[in-house]
Length: 366
Image (cartoon, rainbow, N blue to C red; front, side):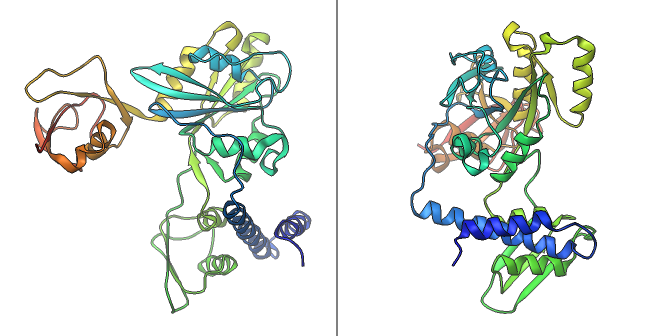
Protein backbone atom coordinates (compact mmCIF):
# COMPACT_ATOMS: atom_id res chain seq x y z
CA UNK A 1 0.00 0.00 0.00
CA UNK A 2 1.51 3.38 -1.00
CA UNK A 3 2.47 5.84 1.71
CA UNK A 4 0.85 9.27 1.97
CA UNK A 5 4.00 10.83 0.47
CA UNK A 6 3.83 8.43 -2.49
CA UNK A 7 0.12 9.15 -3.05
CA UNK A 8 0.81 12.89 -2.98
CA UNK A 9 3.60 12.49 -5.55
CA UNK A 10 1.35 10.37 -7.80
CA UNK A 11 -1.46 12.92 -7.66
CA UNK A 12 0.93 15.83 -8.25
CA UNK A 13 2.31 14.03 -11.31
CA UNK A 14 -1.24 13.42 -12.60
CA UNK A 15 -2.04 17.10 -12.00
CA UNK A 16 1.11 18.16 -13.87
CA UNK A 17 0.22 16.00 -16.88
CA UNK A 18 -3.45 17.05 -17.05
CA UNK A 19 -3.98 19.86 -19.54
CA UNK A 20 -6.36 22.55 -18.33
CA UNK A 21 -9.55 23.08 -20.32
CA UNK A 22 -13.26 23.27 -19.64
CA UNK A 23 -13.63 19.48 -19.72
CA UNK A 24 -10.80 18.85 -17.22
CA UNK A 25 -11.45 21.83 -14.92
CA UNK A 26 -13.56 19.87 -12.43
CA UNK A 27 -11.10 16.94 -12.34
CA UNK A 28 -8.18 19.32 -11.71
CA UNK A 29 -10.01 20.94 -8.80
CA UNK A 30 -10.68 17.53 -7.25
CA UNK A 31 -7.02 16.61 -7.65
CA UNK A 32 -5.96 19.83 -5.91
CA UNK A 33 -8.42 19.18 -3.08
CA UNK A 34 -7.23 15.58 -2.66
CA UNK A 35 -3.57 16.67 -2.57
CA UNK A 36 -4.32 19.37 0.00
CA UNK A 37 -6.28 16.91 2.14
CA UNK A 38 -3.42 14.38 2.07
CA UNK A 39 -0.87 17.07 2.93
CA UNK A 40 -3.02 18.09 5.90
CA UNK A 41 -3.12 14.48 7.07
CA UNK A 42 0.64 14.19 6.62
CA UNK A 43 1.24 17.28 8.76
CA UNK A 44 -1.06 15.94 11.47
CA UNK A 45 0.85 12.65 11.62
CA UNK A 46 4.19 14.45 11.81
CA UNK A 47 2.89 16.65 14.62
CA UNK A 48 1.55 13.63 16.52
CA UNK A 49 4.99 12.03 16.32
CA UNK A 50 6.57 15.16 17.75
CA UNK A 51 8.44 15.88 14.53
CA UNK A 52 9.58 19.40 15.46
CA UNK A 53 11.44 21.64 13.09
CA UNK A 54 14.97 22.50 14.38
CA UNK A 55 14.73 26.25 14.79
CA UNK A 56 13.06 27.93 17.74
CA UNK A 57 12.96 31.70 18.08
CA UNK A 58 11.38 33.39 21.07
CA UNK A 59 9.18 36.26 19.91
CA UNK A 60 9.82 39.63 21.51
CA UNK A 61 8.94 43.27 21.02
CA UNK A 62 5.78 44.70 19.50
CA UNK A 63 5.91 42.65 16.27
CA UNK A 64 8.11 40.20 14.37
CA UNK A 65 9.47 40.70 10.85
CA UNK A 66 11.14 37.95 8.78
CA UNK A 67 13.76 38.77 6.14
CA UNK A 68 13.25 36.09 3.48
CA UNK A 69 15.37 35.77 0.35
CA UNK A 70 17.75 33.78 -1.78
CA UNK A 71 21.29 33.19 -0.49
CA UNK A 72 23.67 36.17 -0.70
CA UNK A 73 21.14 38.91 -1.50
CA UNK A 74 22.19 40.99 1.52
CA UNK A 75 19.72 40.01 4.25
CA UNK A 76 22.40 40.07 6.95
CA UNK A 77 23.65 43.49 5.86
CA UNK A 78 20.09 44.82 5.95
CA UNK A 79 19.58 43.33 9.43
CA UNK A 80 22.75 44.98 10.69
CA UNK A 81 21.70 48.28 9.14
CA UNK A 82 18.23 48.51 10.65
CA UNK A 83 18.72 46.76 14.02
CA UNK A 84 21.18 46.28 16.85
CA UNK A 85 22.12 42.79 15.60
CA UNK A 86 25.50 41.71 14.34
CA UNK A 87 24.92 39.02 11.74
CA UNK A 88 27.93 37.63 9.90
CA UNK A 89 28.28 39.06 6.40
CA UNK A 90 30.18 37.44 3.55
CA UNK A 91 30.38 37.49 -0.24
CA UNK A 92 29.37 33.85 -0.57
CA UNK A 93 26.22 31.78 -0.28
CA UNK A 94 24.82 30.43 3.00
CA UNK A 95 26.71 32.80 5.30
CA UNK A 96 23.76 32.70 7.72
CA UNK A 97 23.35 29.14 8.98
CA UNK A 98 21.06 30.01 11.89
CA UNK A 99 18.27 32.51 12.42
CA UNK A 100 19.71 35.77 13.73
CA UNK A 101 17.33 38.10 15.63
CA UNK A 102 17.74 41.84 16.03
CA UNK A 103 15.60 44.67 17.39
CA UNK A 104 14.60 47.63 15.25
CA UNK A 105 13.52 50.68 17.23
CA UNK A 106 11.27 53.06 15.35
CA UNK A 107 8.67 55.62 16.46
CA UNK A 108 8.63 54.17 19.96
CA UNK A 109 8.17 50.59 18.72
CA UNK A 110 10.57 47.73 19.35
CA UNK A 111 10.28 45.40 16.37
CA UNK A 112 11.99 42.01 16.25
CA UNK A 113 13.65 41.38 12.86
CA UNK A 114 14.81 37.87 11.93
CA UNK A 115 17.60 37.23 9.43
CA UNK A 116 16.71 33.86 7.90
CA UNK A 117 19.06 31.45 6.10
CA UNK A 118 18.75 31.70 2.32
CA UNK A 119 15.77 29.99 0.69
CA UNK A 120 16.55 27.65 -2.20
CA UNK A 121 14.43 25.71 -4.69
CA UNK A 122 12.68 22.84 -2.87
CA UNK A 123 12.84 24.50 0.55
CA UNK A 124 9.18 23.69 1.25
CA UNK A 125 9.99 20.00 0.74
CA UNK A 126 12.86 20.16 3.24
CA UNK A 127 15.82 20.95 1.01
CA UNK A 128 18.45 23.08 2.75
CA UNK A 129 16.56 22.86 6.07
CA UNK A 130 13.87 24.81 4.26
CA UNK A 131 10.87 23.50 6.21
CA UNK A 132 12.55 24.43 9.48
CA UNK A 133 13.21 27.94 8.21
CA UNK A 134 9.75 28.43 6.72
CA UNK A 135 8.07 27.17 9.89
CA UNK A 136 9.57 30.19 11.69
CA UNK A 137 8.45 32.51 8.89
CA UNK A 138 4.84 31.36 9.48
CA UNK A 139 4.90 33.11 12.86
CA UNK A 140 5.95 36.51 11.50
CA UNK A 141 3.71 39.58 11.47
CA UNK A 142 5.36 40.87 8.28
CA UNK A 143 7.58 39.30 5.63
CA UNK A 144 10.22 41.34 3.81
CA UNK A 145 11.16 39.58 0.59
CA UNK A 146 14.80 40.53 0.01
CA UNK A 147 15.92 40.39 -3.63
CA UNK A 148 18.79 42.10 -5.40
CA UNK A 149 19.06 43.84 -8.76
CA UNK A 150 20.69 40.75 -10.33
CA UNK A 151 17.93 38.33 -9.25
CA UNK A 152 14.88 40.56 -8.68
CA UNK A 153 12.14 38.05 -9.49
CA UNK A 154 10.62 36.77 -6.21
CA UNK A 155 8.36 34.15 -7.86
CA UNK A 156 10.24 31.08 -6.60
CA UNK A 157 10.34 32.54 -3.07
CA UNK A 158 6.60 33.11 -3.22
CA UNK A 159 6.08 29.56 -4.51
CA UNK A 160 8.06 28.02 -1.63
CA UNK A 161 6.13 30.13 0.89
CA UNK A 162 2.85 29.13 -0.77
CA UNK A 163 3.72 25.43 -0.51
CA UNK A 164 4.20 25.93 3.25
CA UNK A 165 0.73 27.44 3.55
CA UNK A 166 1.95 31.05 3.72
CA UNK A 167 -0.31 33.44 1.80
CA UNK A 168 1.12 36.89 1.12
CA UNK A 169 -1.02 40.03 1.14
CA UNK A 170 -4.25 38.04 1.30
CA UNK A 171 -7.05 38.11 3.85
CA UNK A 172 -8.41 34.84 5.30
CA UNK A 173 -11.30 33.34 3.27
CA UNK A 174 -14.73 34.41 4.45
CA UNK A 175 -16.12 30.92 4.98
CA UNK A 176 -17.88 29.29 7.93
CA UNK A 177 -18.06 25.48 8.21
CA UNK A 178 -20.14 23.84 10.94
CA UNK A 179 -20.06 20.07 11.24
CA UNK A 180 -23.28 18.33 12.24
CA UNK A 181 -24.44 14.81 12.97
CA UNK A 182 -26.78 14.39 9.98
CA UNK A 183 -28.47 16.22 7.15
CA UNK A 184 -25.79 15.97 4.48
CA UNK A 185 -23.99 18.99 3.02
CA UNK A 186 -25.89 22.27 3.12
CA UNK A 187 -23.82 24.87 1.25
CA UNK A 188 -25.00 28.45 0.77
CA UNK A 189 -23.58 31.81 -0.19
CA UNK A 190 -24.42 35.35 0.90
CA UNK A 191 -22.90 36.79 -2.32
CA UNK A 192 -23.15 35.75 -6.00
CA UNK A 193 -20.50 33.15 -6.88
CA UNK A 194 -18.80 33.66 -10.26
CA UNK A 195 -15.63 31.58 -9.76
CA UNK A 196 -17.03 28.38 -8.27
CA UNK A 197 -20.40 26.67 -8.12
CA UNK A 198 -21.99 25.34 -4.96
CA UNK A 199 -21.78 21.83 -6.43
CA UNK A 200 -18.02 22.24 -6.85
CA UNK A 201 -17.83 23.36 -3.23
CA UNK A 202 -19.65 20.18 -2.17
CA UNK A 203 -17.24 18.01 -4.18
CA UNK A 204 -14.26 19.70 -2.53
CA UNK A 205 -15.83 19.24 0.90
CA UNK A 206 -16.25 15.52 0.26
CA UNK A 207 -12.56 15.25 -0.69
CA UNK A 208 -11.79 16.61 2.78
CA UNK A 209 -14.06 14.04 4.41
CA UNK A 210 -17.07 16.25 5.12
CA UNK A 211 -20.34 14.34 4.90
CA UNK A 212 -22.66 16.36 7.15
CA UNK A 213 -22.01 20.07 7.47
CA UNK A 214 -23.53 23.51 7.09
CA UNK A 215 -21.31 25.85 5.05
CA UNK A 216 -21.74 29.58 4.50
CA UNK A 217 -19.58 31.36 1.90
CA UNK A 218 -19.35 35.14 2.33
CA UNK A 219 -17.13 36.13 -0.61
CA UNK A 220 -16.90 35.43 -4.34
CA UNK A 221 -14.38 32.75 -3.56
CA UNK A 222 -12.04 30.81 -5.83
CA UNK A 223 -11.75 27.03 -5.47
CA UNK A 224 -8.12 27.49 -4.34
CA UNK A 225 -9.09 29.81 -1.47
CA UNK A 226 -11.90 27.43 -0.50
CA UNK A 227 -9.38 24.58 -0.39
CA UNK A 228 -7.06 26.76 1.70
CA UNK A 229 -9.82 27.29 4.26
CA UNK A 230 -10.53 23.55 4.51
CA UNK A 231 -6.81 22.79 4.67
CA UNK A 232 -6.88 24.72 7.95
CA UNK A 233 -3.17 25.48 8.30
CA UNK A 234 -2.70 28.52 6.05
CA UNK A 235 -1.46 31.79 7.50
CA UNK A 236 -2.09 35.21 5.95
CA UNK A 237 0.84 37.61 6.29
CA UNK A 238 1.47 41.04 4.72
CA UNK A 239 4.66 41.36 2.68
CA UNK A 240 6.83 43.97 1.01
CA UNK A 241 9.95 43.74 -1.18
CA UNK A 242 13.37 45.18 -0.37
CA UNK A 243 15.29 45.57 -3.64
CA UNK A 244 18.96 45.52 -2.62
CA UNK A 245 22.27 46.46 -4.30
CA UNK A 246 20.79 49.38 -6.26
CA UNK A 247 24.22 51.03 -6.17
CA UNK A 248 25.58 48.42 -8.58
CA UNK A 249 23.38 49.39 -11.55
CA UNK A 250 22.51 52.70 -13.26
CA UNK A 251 19.34 54.37 -11.97
CA UNK A 252 17.47 53.80 -15.26
CA UNK A 253 18.03 50.04 -15.00
CA UNK A 254 16.86 50.06 -11.38
CA UNK A 255 13.72 51.93 -12.49
CA UNK A 256 13.03 49.24 -15.11
CA UNK A 257 13.39 46.52 -12.48
CA UNK A 258 10.97 48.42 -10.24
CA UNK A 259 8.42 48.49 -13.07
CA UNK A 260 8.69 44.71 -13.31
CA UNK A 261 7.69 44.49 -9.64
CA UNK A 262 4.52 46.52 -10.15
CA UNK A 263 1.77 45.54 -7.74
CA UNK A 264 4.22 45.18 -4.83
CA UNK A 265 5.30 47.69 -2.24
CA UNK A 266 9.01 47.91 -3.16
CA UNK A 267 11.70 49.73 -1.19
CA UNK A 268 14.98 50.16 -3.13
CA UNK A 269 18.05 50.00 -0.89
CA UNK A 270 21.81 49.64 -0.91
CA UNK A 271 22.41 47.94 2.41
CA UNK A 272 26.20 48.02 1.95
CA UNK A 273 26.16 51.82 1.59
CA UNK A 274 23.28 52.45 4.02
CA UNK A 275 21.05 53.93 1.32
CA UNK A 276 17.29 53.58 1.69
CA UNK A 277 17.39 51.88 5.08
CA UNK A 278 15.41 54.63 6.79
CA UNK A 279 12.74 54.29 4.10
CA UNK A 280 12.72 50.55 4.72
CA UNK A 281 12.25 51.07 8.46
CA UNK A 282 9.38 53.46 7.79
CA UNK A 283 7.76 50.98 5.36
CA UNK A 284 8.06 48.14 7.90
CA UNK A 285 6.44 50.25 10.60
CA UNK A 286 3.64 51.36 8.30
CA UNK A 287 2.91 47.86 6.94
CA UNK A 288 2.75 46.42 10.46
CA UNK A 289 -0.07 48.92 11.08
CA UNK A 290 1.05 49.75 14.60
CA UNK A 291 -0.28 52.64 16.65
CA UNK A 292 0.98 54.44 19.75
CA UNK A 293 -1.10 55.23 22.79
CA UNK A 294 -0.03 57.00 25.97
CA UNK A 295 -0.90 56.00 29.51
CA UNK A 296 -2.07 58.57 32.03
CA UNK A 297 -2.21 57.57 35.71
CA UNK A 298 -5.33 58.67 37.55
CA UNK A 299 -4.74 62.21 38.81
CA UNK A 300 -1.33 62.44 37.10
CA UNK A 301 0.22 63.47 33.81
CA UNK A 302 0.44 61.29 30.71
CA UNK A 303 3.82 59.78 29.87
CA UNK A 304 4.32 61.17 26.34
CA UNK A 305 7.89 59.83 26.11
CA UNK A 306 7.17 56.09 26.35
CA UNK A 307 4.16 55.09 24.22
CA UNK A 308 2.49 51.70 24.39
CA UNK A 309 2.71 50.28 20.85
CA UNK A 310 -0.14 48.00 19.74
CA UNK A 311 -1.85 46.86 16.54
CA UNK A 312 -4.39 49.17 14.90
CA UNK A 313 -7.92 48.10 15.77
CA UNK A 314 -7.00 47.16 19.34
CA UNK A 315 -9.57 47.62 22.09
CA UNK A 316 -9.18 48.85 25.65
CA UNK A 317 -9.24 45.18 26.69
CA UNK A 318 -6.18 44.52 24.51
CA UNK A 319 -4.47 47.54 26.07
CA UNK A 320 -5.17 46.13 29.54
CA UNK A 321 -3.74 42.73 28.57
CA UNK A 322 -0.63 44.40 27.15
CA UNK A 323 -0.02 46.17 30.48
CA UNK A 324 -0.73 43.31 32.91
CA UNK A 325 -2.82 40.15 32.75
CA UNK A 326 -4.70 41.11 35.94
CA UNK A 327 -5.97 44.41 34.51
CA UNK A 328 -8.93 42.86 32.68
CA UNK A 329 -10.24 41.09 35.81
CA UNK A 330 -9.85 44.26 37.91
CA UNK A 331 -11.12 46.67 35.23
CA UNK A 332 -13.84 49.20 36.14
CA UNK A 333 -13.69 51.67 33.24
CA UNK A 334 -11.25 53.81 31.26
CA UNK A 335 -11.09 57.46 30.24
CA UNK A 336 -9.86 58.37 26.79
CA UNK A 337 -8.56 61.58 25.25
CA UNK A 338 -7.81 61.67 21.52
CA UNK A 339 -9.23 60.74 18.14
CA UNK A 340 -11.24 57.74 19.36
CA UNK A 341 -13.07 59.80 22.01
CA UNK A 342 -16.30 61.67 21.28
CA UNK A 343 -15.19 64.26 23.85
CA UNK A 344 -12.07 64.66 26.05
CA UNK A 345 -11.97 62.20 28.94
CA UNK A 346 -14.82 60.06 27.60
CA UNK A 347 -15.64 57.13 29.88
CA UNK A 348 -15.40 53.84 27.94
CA UNK A 349 -15.50 50.09 28.47
CA UNK A 350 -13.30 47.20 27.42
CA UNK A 351 -14.81 47.03 23.91
CA UNK A 352 -13.80 50.60 22.97
CA UNK A 353 -11.41 50.72 19.96
CA UNK A 354 -8.45 53.06 20.48
CA UNK A 355 -6.65 55.10 17.82
CA UNK A 356 -3.14 56.38 17.25
CA UNK A 357 -2.15 59.09 19.71
CA UNK A 358 -4.89 58.38 22.25
CA UNK A 359 -4.23 59.05 25.93
CA UNK A 360 -5.83 56.50 28.28
CA UNK A 361 -6.42 56.26 32.00
CA UNK A 362 -7.33 52.77 33.27
CA UNK A 363 -9.44 52.69 36.44
CA UNK A 364 -9.20 49.42 38.37
CA UNK A 365 -11.05 47.87 41.27
CA UNK A 366 -9.00 47.82 44.45
